[in-house]
Amino acid sequence: MKSQKNLLYCSLFLIGCLFMISGLSAEDTALVYVIDIRTEIGGGVSTYIKKGVQKAEQANADAIIFDVDTPGGKVDSAVKIIRSIQETQIPTIAFVNRQAISAGAMISAACDQIVMTSGATIGDSAPIDSQGSEEVGEKIIAYIRGTIRSTAERQDRNPDIAEAMVDKRLFLVRLENGDIIKLRPEEYYSEQEAGTQMQVLCGTGELLNLTTRQALEYGFVDTQAENLSELLAQYRIVEIDQDYRPDNKDSVIAALTQNNALDKQKELGANRVTFIKSLANAKVEKFVVTLADRTVFFLTSPYISALLLSLGGLGLLVEIRTPGFGIPGFLGLLFIGLFFGGHMLNEVPNAGILGLLFIVGLALIILEVFVIPGFGVAGILGLILMLVSVFYIFFQNTDDVNTALLWLSVSIILTSVLAIVATIFLPKSAPFQRFALSTVMSTDQGYHSAGAQDFQSFIGKTGVALTPLRPAGTARIDNKRLDVVTVGDFIAQNTRVKVLEVEGSKISVEALEE
Image (cartoon, helix red, strand yellow):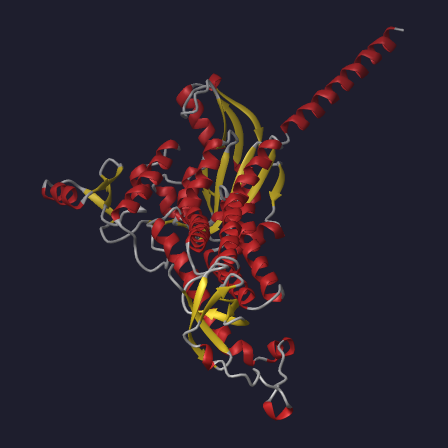
């Protein structure tokens, strides 16, 4: 009986242990989200990364790894990505899997950890103009320099190294004690004259671009890994009982390598650094760039945006010049819809309202052309609304007035060129001939453009406009109802008119002053 009880107790103990082990293993399984940054940085990429970070937060991921291989891109988009990274409470790791140049270096510096593969590079973050040919002015350089410096400081990285990636006027030197600092030319030459021993890591006229070995040696990155599995095997999720980051919390969750975690324990005390779980066997979820994301990237690129706008404008111009509503008008509205719709999906602020303003402006111009004579307030207001809405879209895409004006000008010029080409060549094209009436009604077949009546006798005579003349209409002159046109502005109904000249059946009149 006693042996049976002992057997029962042992069985219960073993079952309890199994439950504890399974619970621990389930708890120890980490979840990691991988977000690719393997293209040029633009507005679409910043929106995609923001969605990826939100998805990781909803899934309670333990870490986010950004797989970086980018030549850079737009600074304003990089700043949006940096904000998304800094606002999340999930530990972030930049995996520089070939290159992190320009905006890519700024994004990597914003992450909690940086890991590089062998043969990778990081740096060269100087801003260039929209054509990619010349560096921009001091004001923008100062903005980028301040942004990357504050980003590096936030992650306890050497801010002088980050600055040397932006400003080629600096010397980056290593002192005898191993400290790496920046020096302006006058400071460097002064220290040199004073006999200070220092090694130049990057001289003036150069932008700092670090290899993997250099980045590790200078302490700008945390470790090296050749693939994702090797990276995950090195990292642990730990809880640090100290506000070592400016997030106003008593403790933070961080992703650290085994060595870094041990160093942190020595620095703060073993009781303040608690190991939570390893990433070695983590479940990896990849936030994939969908076809919809790629479509948004494509539609919102400056080149395609300008082309869509130009083709849309061309279609609407052709439609206005031809009666009815046909293929040109449909295509014009389609291209304009793709322009504004792409930017709405890219979360450009007020893109929908701007699209509505563009439609209102277009309606005012159509009203001016077909209803209101001349070209006055409605036409000017419509043109202003259309230009302002398009300019604001380009400005939101670049955050730079000059670049926005450049792309707006490109769109206007391209539309004008396409309109001229269409005017010259479209009437002669085979598709146009299918829709156009090509039958010629010649006089030898009995067709006449006007009757045989001679209207010369009406020159100098007066009468009354029976209909509004805009500019064509009907007037009663010498007790006869005649089709007339004005030689000046709009003439209202019942206004007295006088015949000025006659060309065949065309009778030109002007309003008589009362």
